[in-house]
Amino acid sequence: MLKTLLLAALAATLAGAAHAQAPAFAPRDESVEALPAGPGREETFGLCSACHAFRLVSNQGMSRAAWDDTLTFMTQRHNMPDVQGAERDAILDYLAAHYAPRTQGRGGWTNPFAPQ
Ligand code: HEC
Image (tube, rainbow, N blue to C red):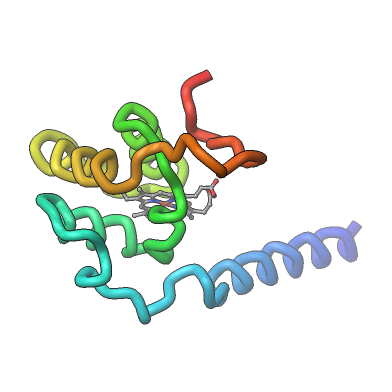
């Protein structure tokens, strides 16, 4: 019993350490200037790259509604600040304008946040 508890504690510690160190998660080689120019760019980069690479965001293509769901998911699951009002609008406008769904040549991948 004690051994099981110790193993569980060790596993939890290792999982936490791996999460904190994962290098691809928050690389510091991205800059806001590399993003497409437009209103909301600074807000979006600042908020979304606080926890992970902006690449995780820019790899996606979603509708405004699906981006909205993604922000809600980040808030509920990962404790992202619950951004609302004009700032949320600016971020959603920016994401929808520059990271819209790609319709061609991207087969085989399903957006986990897309409305069913
Ligand atoms: C407080 C931390 C935090 C913030 C801020 C944050 N995220 Fe995330 N995000 C995460 C974590 C942790 C993951 C890891 C994958 C998972 O568990 O979904 C993630 C993963 C993702 C993914 C990939 C999901 C997948 O299934 O591959 C997307 C897209 C995403 N975030 C979008 C955003 C956007 C857009 C913003 C800014 C509006 C943002 N995130 C801000 C914590 C955050």
